[in-house]
Length: 224
Image (cartoon, rainbow, N blue to C red; front, side):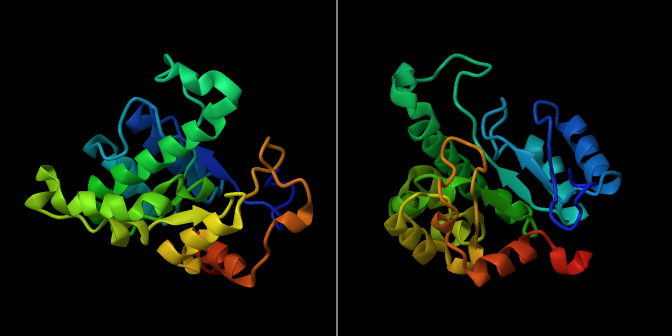
């Protein structure tokens, strides 16, 4: 698709994160040989996002100057459900996703991943789950809990170092996210053809600033 319409599409490579070495090899192949522009990973693949074992993937993304997009998947695909209540009403697609995305951000910020890789750009799906709503509580936690007292964590600052799509289905939620991280850290998300895709084109808020943000995140200026 990308090769057939290079003026319309760019692609990310989904990495086999269960094997860090192979993930690095695939990222290099995808960017160097295939011309893809980023890495696509999940949130639950057997290794926590703050595990130093994943530093090699992060370092490779920085070296290749490509962003990493993080999107969760329903629980129980290849492991037992953590909470069977999420099987009701398709809650794994809403509450389950929100939980995974918020947990991913907590690991990235509290776990020092962004500090170890200051050049790393990570974009989270669905506005980063509940992170904007919980930012104050998580910030307090990062300064007062026993594990953080010796080296307090600036959660709010870490949150502003991440990127987010604005696909949250609610103007008030988007306003809060924008206030927390700044409009310059947001890009448009649609989940095209997915269950939660906008039903009308005009439901996607078009703002030139979002276009400019995407150009920065995808390094389009350096590719021109």
